[in-house]
Length: 435
Image (tube, rainbow, N blue to C red; front, top):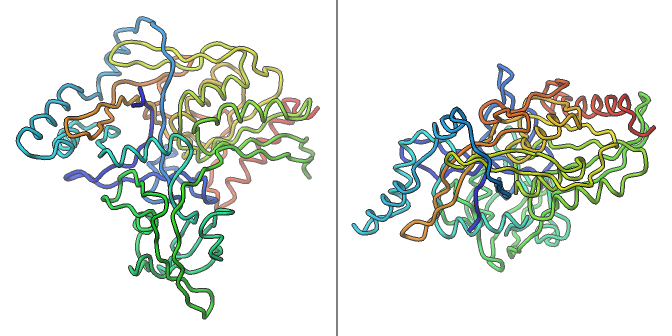
């Protein structure tokens, strides 16, 4: 079972609580954008139901004994839940012939903790699968048009949907005979994935199971039966940016959509392979988290060892450190927005505090609490908040986010995304990238 975690999980439905889903956008352009900013400039909670077929997670790793200050212990304990109380509640429920997971979820719903959650064994299996950067599905993403029609937004190359001839722009009419017109995207994703649980679970279905889709292209209507597969996602995309019209110099753009296994090494490889003298534009916009160990490895690409972050677990301080030998001379700009969360915020805060980068964009989400998994009496798993992490300068991220050095406001649809990248490139040129 994974150790201490920092993640933005989809919530299971709780009595009296609203259902919240956070989907990673690596499978569809614009699935997580700067449009998540609230009117007051603070990052808002992401909307329920984005376009992707997989969810957000994040794990912490690495530990070293450092004595915490009393004030830090108080701050960490303020929003934590007693693990023993949750385990005892589940055990009593099972003894009485009731659901242990429901008893634990009821206790959590009264705690006021926004991040603790309870998952069934099947749901937690999906969590473990997502840690490997994989998911089970048919390789398509959807969006709902203004008139309520459900459309195919993107198709994964080589996936079941593409092989069946499905293309972006096709209208999705039915899934296994159920009309999807007017339904929330989250419900359609649940049907596509074969999720038999309530919305908000970690959806995981077996490879080889089938789903029947009703489609329309123009006046033509047809049906296709697709077989779900285990699909691996690409968390890192690298692009060489040529000299811009405004005189910006060449640079390497490294877009990191999530920190799943292997992401950190892919970032390090991209930095090593960048042309001599080129700067790096590290794009963490819409990055909803991932394995914190991978974020620390990514930090090691730009730092020559030293502190990345600290996190506390019930009053005991732990330290995350970068490996020595990173490229500390190459100019670096990090792009962030309201969809930059958790492990991505940890990386941003480390590079900013260490004076290694200029951060461009809008304030990040503000998720800095640490969760610890605990197996309950009925086999379900409770992810309980046990503490919070801080940047090298001691800044608390939870509820505050990371403030960029250069603010660029505006959602992607209004040009904000392109503006941030253009500003980032100008800053990079000023730092000497490409010189």
